[in-house]
Image 1: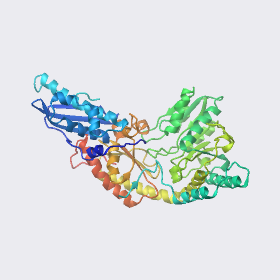
Image 2: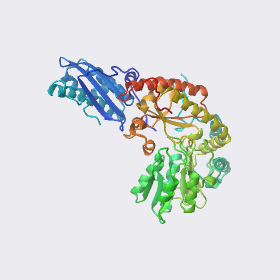
Image 3: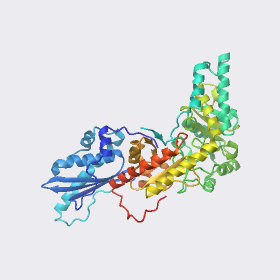
Image 4: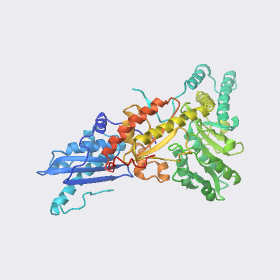
Length: 141
Length: 396
């Protein structure tokens, strides 16, 4: 029961006022990453239009950094083309939050991975003839 | 903003009386307690008065108290000290899976040194089973170490029973009583312990001072070498002001123990019932009837503990969590895991540990603050499915 978290103001802002919280009904792609054993599970939903991320929303079980990361990665992804979005790195997410404590960098990995998983899910669905795909999850731990 | 401190198992604010006793030493006592001259003798007198007060608090004799640099050192001196002193008799140690890291890490170190260690499991309620402990005893067992009360859950262990077993089998028995001091009565005789770790800053005394009770006749190899101080068990010029402060804190803690325990138990139960009435899906971690009066550990389903702490912090409230996210480790609390609490629930655990300054107003404020924090985090959680309004779930 020890340790500490020295979060930037931006992290705290995104923790207290997260953007894009919730589900998307009939999403075009869903990515779920993480594992409750490790403390974070991130579920990211996307809506795609004209090869761009028209909407992105999330549900996250996790610490302050995990929630802030989820919020930031959805913000960064919105409006981007799929190729641009899939290139978003965890470092980008972390620096957009004015940095994360070293012990929390893995949370930004989750953000990157959740977005990639959602895009992969979308592309898989596109590939396997519209609507046939059952697995909406991806890489659940 | 008012601060509401609900993390007294981590540390406690220094009492004014303790600070005054320490200041008096810093201002007026300049001698080294080991010096033969009059200044040294004056310092020695004060040192021994501090020792008497600490000894009194646990029913020990002053010469059985060795001062250390804190609780962790006391635990290490006990565990390593016994292991090496009795190595010719055997190499087996029994402890529990829920000990403080000071004991667990010392045991893991000793495993590397060739000792073998049994880590006893605990029940779902967080209790060590004395029967299981007895079965774990081997001819080579040279130490039993079981904590008096757990820091995370507050669960009080059956120390007297274990003490009886240890005595029958003539095995040195150590208990880390750091969380028990000032919260429940402690007596080295009644508990049947041979070594007991204590710490100053958990009882409104200073940080950086602890003590190990070592029963007369029990041998301990020191961790460091250098001088005759503390009968050679802990060489180094004594932390006189710290020891005097520790002594003063012990006396105060024992004086008010019963009334303060009753008061805290009532507040703690009000906190717990207030939360349970207003927040569904909350689980109590630890045996309900066998806990320190000031401690409650709750798991809030569907959410992670650090988020709760950050939300409470906004309102000036300080508490603790067993979540991995705050410890810099990957796994959640070893204590809750040993109790079989599933990972997600352990991640969502919050420990509230009350103390002297807390009032009913603080508790009511905390409940009010907690309700929206948990609600908001749950609405964000992928695991949370809102329940029909009718059933409030199995709350506790």
